[in-house]
Image (cartoon, rainbow, N blue to C red):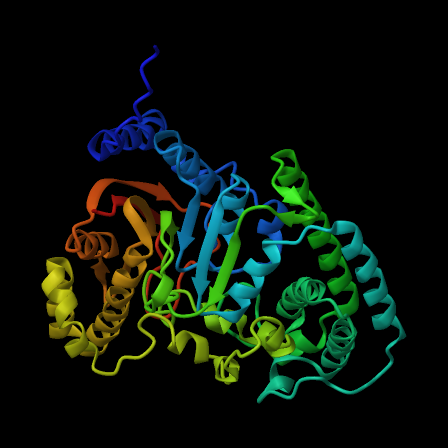
Length: 455
């Protein structure tokens, strides 16, 4: 009689060594391997919208490949700072379930559109009817009247954008409207009076704005056609993996609008196999103003199509989203950071240095890490025991002081008994980031922290 098979016993220490070896072996042969300088092309749904500081898809694909080689039982990926959905797309292309969250309605809209469905033929038909509605609309009314709209859009441009808005609103299918809103979001970014060379809203000189040859309907049509083609490309990849049924992804691809410091469904808390995320590198005001970058597109989108009960205060002004993000509120920042300083000697040292030279900067840094620290326990609570974590981070400078985010975050995680597996750096060649901003030099390299949650 044949003896029954005995299931292999998972040994986390052996898995850690294997993962570390895989991640570092290529870099040993090519120090620039993880930079993907020549291969960082944004294809399929990655190319829908120019969102700030998007992660490099090829890097994420390789991370997923390496961790799955060590832990083939991984089935679900969690990203509490989902952004434009780069992790979501790469998880789907490996047939994995994905769960994400973001505080920015535009990020959530992007993710939900990238999650499908993938009925390209129906979408092309609906897009053709939308173009007809836009062409037939000769109305002169303007659909948005947010404060200062005339500063950011020429009147003729606003009239033409309004025709697109009315055409989208007449579409009775929610997923089609969402797809169309994304094309409109990129259109508004390109035809507004704000410069496209920066994430912050910077008005163009009047003479430059007045003499630009703008055709919003044509721009929208070109973006819409390109996005449909990119959706079709992703459909082909998913079909090749047998991951589509009736044009829907057979796995889970879910993104919620919300704060990373809160627990999802506390009464029935889901837990995931793997974390891959890239949190903000500092408060949005002094690093990347995701909310400000999204402000103009969101004025033209029906927010109820993103989330039925979305709070309109999120788009009440250019800083509303950023003020709700990590470090957005500096009230009681120093007092609120005392717990973080106890957990992280590196942060305590930096805050002490900043306090002696620039108290305002000290408060800004303290507020960010206070909020980041608040998010860690909820995030960890959504991970299974021994789940691996990949945190992609960068160290910025404030008041000419390096803020060692990689060290601080590692200390905060290890204080919660996480195990540090390895760290490695990559140079930033293609990640869309500003060269400089008003208060900090933007990072030229990133660090990937690899940790494992303790049991």
